[in-house]
Image 1 (cartoon, rainbow, N blue to C red):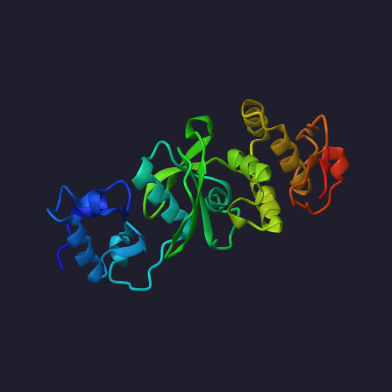
Image 2: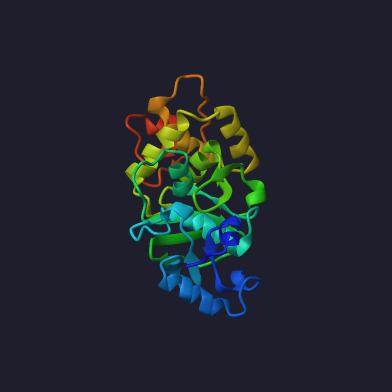
Length: 242
């Protein structure tokens, strides 16, 4: 069947019927036709995904849930107000090798989680203009993800976001910490008023850091929120283990 090349020129490969209004008089019928031929794959009510052109004829193709989450968020809110965050950003940076069943994406307004054919998407209301972001190129969209430093602080601030188990949250923090610019981490923590997240991240990552990375103890002990490092004296970092 003939498929307009314009479909692959869109900024995101997640489609809603109204996105095809400039191509078809009845976009709802055309979406159904494309889906019947396997060109579009149903994601959730009102959403469809267009596979990469070399995967259109592959019925087993499945998008990773974090890639889908960013593409869907861009479809609804645009590129500049959305970003992969938390565990999904950590996975984008290679800090979480295991495939996740839940994706986390920052969007400009409150929104309930969405269960899709490829996993659950958790929307986190955040002002992306106040976050440290980096360009993220995926198979479905070119958008943004939080930087290594921002991602580490975010996970330390909310370790359980996206149903991430505590041990995997700690593993992600250590993987990110070994690659992070800690002067930048301090700057972000200061600007975003996140001293607890910094202290928690520094504690959880102690096993992979040298003594040059400062320990900034909070005024009162902070909860560990389920995080457990490989080996560290929590009190020395101002952290109170659960």
